[in-house]
Image (cartoon, rainbow over all chains, first blue to last red; front, side, top):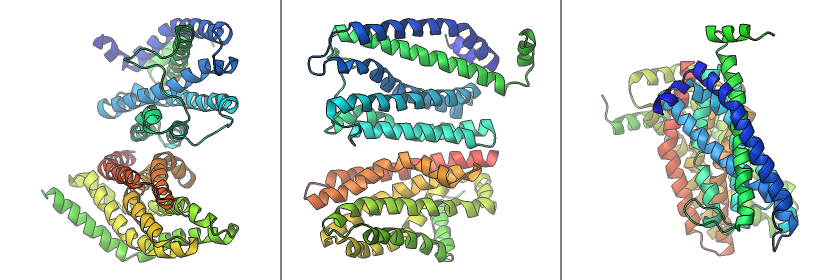
Length: 247
Length: 226
């Protein structure tokens, strides 16, 4: 398995990997999102307190989870880039940041839409919402840093350092519901404990989560593949590839 | 090869000397801080109950802006005159050198800021105890703030556009410091326990002092490698 991962560090192998894996991940995304969202939005039982309006949870929770998970992945990629100088990690860093920023924005937007009928406010300055807003601003800072550097390689390393410095926000978001008296509810899904949410709502939630993870994975592979082609455009293998496909 | 404390002491003294010969820049940032703050009591409606409530938040925002504006000059002079290249070549730990530099800046900016606190108390109608809390929050929080603004300036060294971009980088990282710093004084004004926030603020500053120099040295190496 390590050999497989080492091989991925080469741009050519990585490009071939993205092209091979894309259809499968896309199919998984279609299955997960299609089934999970239909089940959750239409067939799952209504909530006792919140009625039908809770159904936005099936969009909000996967988006929020992914905004955190993608930032954690960015931290890992940053370490790969700075310590082992794996250039693919640098390319992936920018692509993951784009998707992460979208997810963070969506989490905040769907959260606001959910909050208006439930809490009576579009926005409250409680710990979790504030720290998620900080995460969105961090994503934007990372994206802008990547754009402004004079050379892409230098930009990648600066982005990596910025991503690492911002990594400290992640535990703050995750534990904010325990550390502070927040309006946002606590965690229903925990890694090592039984979920506190009923199974009829849990399964569509997990399916939607899987679907959105696959969708982001597909999108990231898609964009990263093209970014690799763009950066390596002077290499022979790219030229051969372009000549193979008729324009 | 010099010992670590000797390196730190040498660069600390160098920075103090350099800045003391160019006090006009320091004066600039302190004046900005004070004038920015004094605009608010003038432009906001005169309400004796309102101004003390706003004072902590406004002070912290003023400090952040003042640091942002002056952070550029922390690194720019040494970068442009090639002194930083010599640091990179010298074999001394770049993180340590930068730590000494920023700490020297912090010591120099601390005294004027603390001297401003009575004036701020006068402008905003703060009591003596509240002013003391404000001074304590500034004392414990400004090291972290200065290090983070220096980090933003370091990013700006090698990138094309500086001012607006620096604010975007710095803002998310400094929000915890702002929240705890201003929150500390607000809690004190309401008579609630504030020592927890003070401890957290000091912890954040210490973490910044300890870890940001490494991020700084990484960014500076990258700016020079280009």
